[in-house]
Length: 386
Image (tube, rainbow, N blue to C red; front, side, top):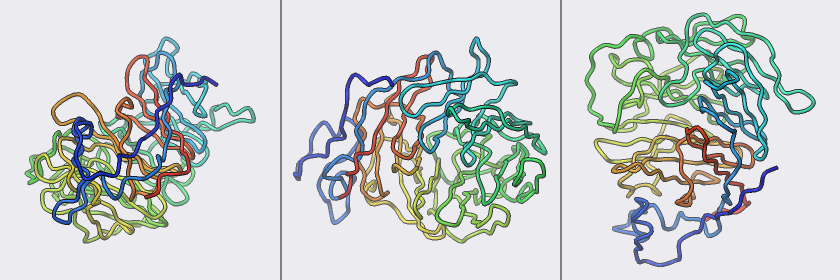
């Protein structure tokens, strides 16, 4: 197992009411409490770091097409290599790989295995006794589905006793065996599958289509965020003024009356231990983080209420905890935050950069999309409470 040459620790700020230029440099406001409003770094910053960070070895010469977390590690799909499409996997140390037939473009974690897929078909990958992934059975989708969309979210997601597949034309299919598919959402219930003119009051930093609706699970329910504008295309990224839909089995879905507020937009959503967290913003240049325990009632996360100068794009959750990643609004830099409970947040060390992230049982992997990716691993320390 390769050992990182350096180790970085998330250092909580000193207990002071003053401000420091170091925090301003990464777009985080002062430590003080102003007018009774909790600002980002203050009472919610942990006294001990939740994760210890170090440089890790990455897959060699990889074009990162898709990345997911496994229970005890991570998997990466890499296309356009001299060996064709490669599936890489790691326990957080050494990476191993195998070549795949066809041209899969995205990965989904399904139970203890993987699904590598393109628009019309997929191949399950299962672990053998030597912890290598080997081909399982093939899957043919009922119609072309989205793959390699801008958000990076899988268009195939676990749901109840099976999984959902989201199509190019706005339909959502459910299957429990990969052989028989049932249509559970039909165009245009979650938005029309074809582009059409539409107006919206929200002003996100960028809008890119097509994509898939953000979907996450909290306790026994799943939540999908769908635009409240009936003319907005299926899965447009981000979702403007989203309306949550809920389901307990992935088959029957019902619309809720929850609201994120006028002009709100959501880039991503994640769930863990009965808590949902969504990231995005309101209006223009006003980043927001929301949380909910049931998907029906959402509130602003006070830790981020005074955040400025960043665009929040990604939130991921796993057994190890939570991570939120953002881009600097006025430059190429990235910033991020981690939490073990979704309430107490630490700023990532400035050296840890990238917008691709996955969370396993004990680690967070942050990676970029370069030919020789820079890899950072955050290992849970067992601390991080406020």
